[in-house]
Length: 607
Image (cartoon, rainbow, N blue to C red):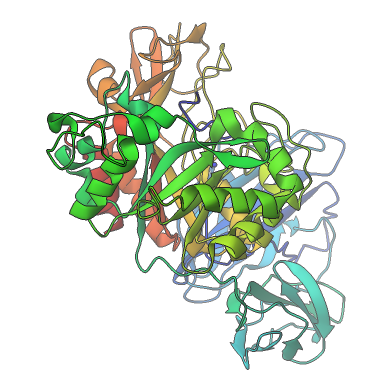
């Protein structure tokens, strides 16, 4: 039985990164050995996150670098990392840190910053020369056009309009991008896109091209939802605060549904995912029948305070969830199928999505417990990629399964999915059509934890749930921010992305270094599994000694752990709100303290 989601790794509004910007260079110098490109990795309206990347395109090493650019009045850098950033009026300068100035031939380094305002950089210089590696005196790239506005939205079309870009040599035309891909090139500042699908989400941006064929930065994005359709899922109506309840937790952990009440957690959540139902023979199936609907709970174990009897129609966790919903009618319960152990069954399910959806519907809506569940959650680890086993169903399989589930369960039910947080280049997010499937789901639980752990027995030690990147991170793209940015860039709405929190830590032993990046000899001892331990144990057995990338770590004796605390959760919830995410979820209730302090931190952090 799987005890944790092991994501192969971990921002959202409908913002598309990209946009290399070319600036002015000194004619006396030939900038042929390096380039600097800019990307807006996320945007929350009044502010944004940007990233510069310097690449050595020459044959000898670069010992240091300096990037200069101009921002329009009202746009500024508010904080930065991996570079020293200063300004003089609207002119900005970034110099390398002591640890990242040297760049080998063919290599690259990046630094990031948070900014205020909505402008884009211009007049870029790298070490005094043009950022594109050429000398282009007096010819700058065009500015970003204004964010498009949408009108005349129908089932199959939308009219877009935007304010013109500016350029010293004149604008030649505009590329119109739908979900990050060019769908048309026009010479005017408007375009009508047709041939769309009813009841579907789209994201549009625009970029200008000047008469020298230089392409400027991409504009802000506008989200469009076409009218009509029968598969548009309902909105949740509020910020999602979801926790996983494991069917097996009632055994060794002795964590019952009633604990949600005694801990105070039930009053602070909106949804529960009951984990897990099995996926076998192409169908949804019961995971543990005894725990699910047969076990008799005593009066002191029961939510109602009344003991189960031998002849009552429904017992087990399902009846306890029914009693919980009677006490807290706002809570919605979804039955989650799959998980780390049982994801191997999805390959056969994907071969006939309609039959799979029928089997799931018949099980979830069984007359004995139909009132308990408000929908279904799919935890496929991972479509068209490797988890406990490797799936080769193809990139379209996940979308096909989610489409079939929505069609069967109807618009009124909740249909959700737990998805990978691997934001690395060529990683698991790119292996399946998550953007295409988004139209059928209420939200995605992005498993932004388990990026690093003692399955790499010798380390390096690293936080298993980093919010952002940091100097020395073992693998680029294995962060919450990178994962969310990649989903948004693909066209998944921010409101359909939930940030994930682990109520546990991951740790190594044989560690002498306090800071992340130390070597180890193996997994630290855990109560139920090597290398993993509940927060309620770690908070006192190995207290926090530092934080990195928005996550706490602890070095006690020869053990090194990383885990989230009420303080780091507060920071992550603030970040999630700033990105317009749909809420948060966590794995899982029994790792919390008896008074539910982590659930409280999520609830108060989201408001």
